[in-house]
Length: 506
Ligand code: GLU
Image 1 (tube, rainbow, N blue to C red):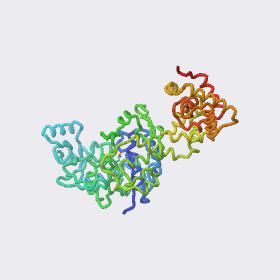
Image 2 (image 1 turned 30 degrees about the vertical axis):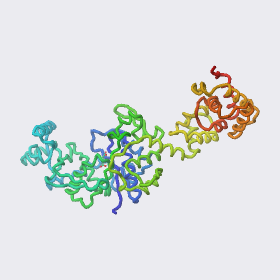
Image 3 (image 1 turned 135 degrees about the horizontal axis):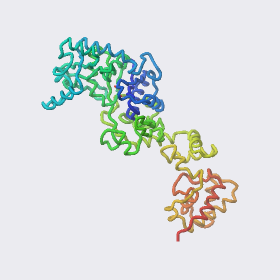
Image 4 (image 1 turned 120 degrees about the vertical axis):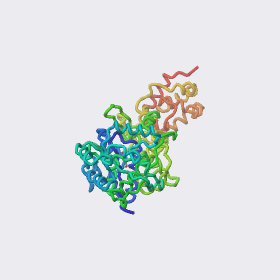
């Protein structure tokens, strides 16, 4: 195999969609597996769609995701610059070569003339209303106008350059995921290669750069598959067919129910993020919360994304980046669209959260809860809470009772469980606890059992009442550990308070 050199080539037109992160990931995995290079190229030739801050956002998102760039806008490299707007001059010679060899031509049509062409073709019942082999000879271009007029128009500077797609050819694209795709050249229109502002279009710039940057594999979203035959033609016309990269067009990401493409709107409606990091749209000021800010761990998100369209062919689901690098293969990517099952993403997050060390989570808890709490206790809290939550912040959101005594008690539990038996046991328990010098989870349990035995009531009957007295809630983490963390003084105080304020329902 030739040296693996892949590229992620986003356009800075807004926040990076989560599908873009998956594309970058697959490129990265292939590069790392083959000790190749991962290139980041910014495709900013469409100045009209440029969004300030988008490039920085892309860089930050990749960095957070753990996708490292070997060559590109941020790090430089032998093929710099990696921002297409800075390579503007370079594309001209290739457009010129295409013109010189009669594979491209100048066109001077105005917007209105293009519209008239479309209408005319439509009226004539023509399915294909594009500028191309069916229509180009009726248009205003260097193929139809006399040489002197053509020259005048070129000199005036207002022209585009279009590809001259040959008639009657079968163009083949060998896609590593989809196999051989054959397209009749009559389906391809004479795409604009150079715009009137002197900028190349995506098609020309993309092909030229992939060639110059010695890209071995083009791995990108399925939406680019229709452009691939056109790119094959460009490689042929530019004499680069031998060095053409291999193509792999990734399956679409679908809404969770499989009904249509995953979109920002669908994600908003269903209440989950679609961007890796929080993004503030500079035009509208609208803020979209990211996966990071929602509480997803980057390792979990990566694991989840890797499985959207790919699988290792085994039962194993938990894969670190290193594992993915070893296991990944383009051959195992599916053709069918991948459902964006957000519950699966949450499941991955839970798995990674459980596997995160208590020390790391304890530091986070101390930092983010804003509570003064010993590190020892913080470690204990996260150790019993992390099994129960999906996102780290839920540890303190659902564990508020560790820091403040309940302000109220769960009514549903009170009405069912706060009865004379509960009051009897809890009173006996509180009295017994006052005699202890300190409690840990074991002694809290032993004292409870003997207090309950002393009044001849089973512990099981009053457990929920005890929990509600201490935490205010009907369910929660291990109660004995909770008491150990709270300490004897606090527990007895809370029991006292509950006994004084909660009334037994008649
Ligand atoms: N600039 C294109 C995009 O934004 C890149 C497509 C490709 O990878 O060729 O998706």
